[in-house]
Structures are given as structure tokens and as C-alpha cells.
Length: 493
Image (tube, rainbow, N blue to C red; front, side, top):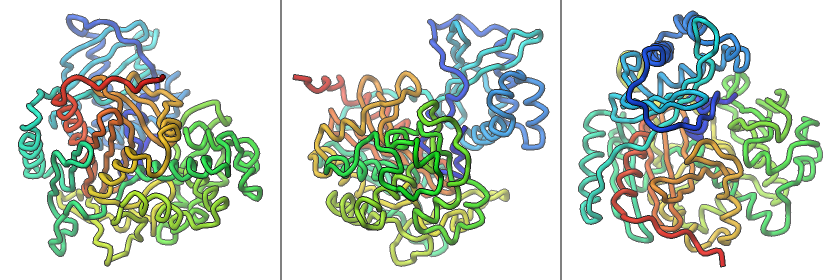
């Protein structure tokens, strides 16, 4: 199980990664939660909010032996730590605002101190006394009132100013429809030591947003007839050092996180951070790890898979991965500030990422980053670069529309409004279809969503730990609510 800890790894986002134990079919709202359900929900949040030393005892006390056997104590404890970090303080005192009863379990809705809304889904064991046997946590759309389109810039500016003043956000935000920017603004400092400000042209670390560019590169090679989605890794990397991956894992499985390949967030990665500046170097940190499951028989978010795809890109194109993306994606799309900058590149004007210290101050993330990012994430781009990328999606500059649709098709589903294609996330907000990705790493967080039918893009980039998600959720909800009726789906004629 790969759970995307924001403090240590790139993320697709915790919506996709936390629906880990249960898929519910919710019924209509109940009048109130019964005492037993609220008690178990309280135990869940108590465990999340506890210290690392306290959690093992709470896990044993409140969670079923069957769940612990299925998922493993280590992964469950990792999940609780991630939730504590992402969702913030005061979780133990939460009270549900709504409850939905289902045949397989119950869903409770909460509003956090930050205003963010989340759903906790619980399934209980049949033992006496009952314990938590299944759970899932997912974000809920913010409850945002629509404004007139002409009032959007002022409404966005007011909200972001408040988030910045409260210390919850630094970075850059851009909302555009077609060529027209509906809102664009930057907040805070790219370098807190020198006082250099963030701007709309400042390159931010994108985390896993870069996975989209790896998917595009594979699609370009497929369109050129140089590979097929069902090719095995060994078709293009005959000397690949892991025989099972070489002979059994397909490109389709790597693109959809169904290969069983795990991640490179491990001790080998941590020990070699300063040396990691190529796909081959990243591969060496995980290639000997056993698969998480048989190829095609599961679905676990992977950072190792895109690294292997990066090596396939290099083998077919004859170009270094970084050079390929720069030549065939960034430059044709007009992304003039985008690149896989090295962590010590002082001339590129990149935003340094920042994490809060135990003393309440801030430190930069230099020591937490590899020498350079990989095909799984860690490249840089500015807010204006991602607007330019959205224009390249719209005018089919990088791929044809049919080829885009292959990338955007939800090959796997992760909830009623969330799917995953070929290294692209997809979903709907109020009936409007979006595609995109998010990313996280120590000291940075980023969100990119493009609504094809509306030619609308929403970009949120932050050089502050866990700062983009709540802003992006609110922003997408506001913009979509304020646009009126959803555009009709494209014609299939």
C-alpha cells in the first residue's frame, strides 16, 4: 500500500490514496448518528490525532484484527500519521455535520477548522464489542456560494489574501478560460532569506504533476508507432535487471499504477538523495524490491513505475529523459520557465519550499529533495507555464484530441467522482469534467486542473507544506459554481 505521505513523497492526492479499505454505496441521509457509530468515529480521530508513541496501542484497541492483518500495522500507522499532517489539529474533537447510512458501512461528514470538508466512511466488525474493520477518508467539495462571473476576481482575491495573512498559503494562483486570465496572483516569498518574492513566472516544484508529462511522452512515442500500450518493459529494455518486471509488466500497467511496482521512497533513496539525478540512479533505489502484487491484479500508486517509463522514453528516443521533455513538451507548449532544475540551481529563480519546524518557525526543503527530480515528479514550472500547457491541450499542439482522450480515459476508478487514466487524474465537479494531477513533496504542494469542455484551467502552486489542497478545492468549487450550467459532453457523431 502506497499512501503518499506529504512529508516524504510525491502524491496523486489523498482522495485517491486513502480510499484504501472500503468502497461504500451511501444511502439517503439519516436523522442522526447513533451513539455507537459516533463512538467509533471518535476512536478513529483520536487515533489519528495521537502521538506516534500512542498510536500502536490505540490501533490494537479500536481496530479489528482482520483489518490489521489485511493492511498491516505499519501501513495503517503511516496512514494515520499522514492524515494528522494533512488535515491539521483538533481532529479528536470533531463532530459530524451529517451521516449517510449504507449497507456496508456508514459515512460521516465533517467540517474542519480550516473550513475543509471531509468524509469518514466506517465499516464495523461483527465481534462484541465491535471494532473498526474498514475505513476510508476523502475530501468533500467545499460549500461555496456562486458569484457573478464579473465578481470572480474580487472573490478569489479576498479569499487568497485571507489565506496568506493567516499563514496558510504562499505561492501562485491562476484561473483562465481560453487565453483570458480570470484571476492571476502571487503571494509570499520564493526565498525567505533574501526576500525574493513569488511571481507568476517563478518556477515551483510540481511534485507528481510531472507524471502527466511522462504520460504525454509515452503517448507521443505510441502515436509515432514506436511502442504499443501492451508492450512489456522488456520489449524496450531487454536488459532490465528485474526479470519479473521485464517479462510480465506492461506499459499500460505502469501508466495506470496497476503493475505492482512500488516506490523509491525508501532507505536507499534517503541515503543517496544528493546523488539522484538520472532515471537510472532512481531505478537503483527500488529495482530489487518485490512487486506489491501480481501485475494487473491490484492498484497502488507508484513512483517507481514512471521512472521505468522514463527509461523506456530514453531507450526509444535516444535522448536523456530531461532533454526529451524539454524538447518535445515544454518548449512546444511555450512553457519557458519549466525544467527539471537541480536542487542547488541558484540561477533558475526557483521557489524554495518551506516546512514548519517543531518550534513554529520555517526551514527550507533543500535537505529533503533529491539532486534532481525524476520521471515521477520533482520538475518545476510557473503558473504561467501551466496556463501555456493548458493552451497546448486545447489546440492539440502536443497530441491529437483522440490521443488526449486515451490519456484522460479513466482506466481505474477511485470513488464516484475520481478516476485515473494514463498518468492523468480525472473526475467531475458539479457535472463538469476535469483532467489533471496534483503533487506534493516536503515543503511544496501543487494542483492542476483543466476542464476540456469549458477550456478552463485552475492552477495552484505553493512553496509551503500542504498549502495547495484546501485552496484548490475551494477555488474549483467557486469557479465551477459561478460558471452556470455545465457544457454538454462532446458529440460522438
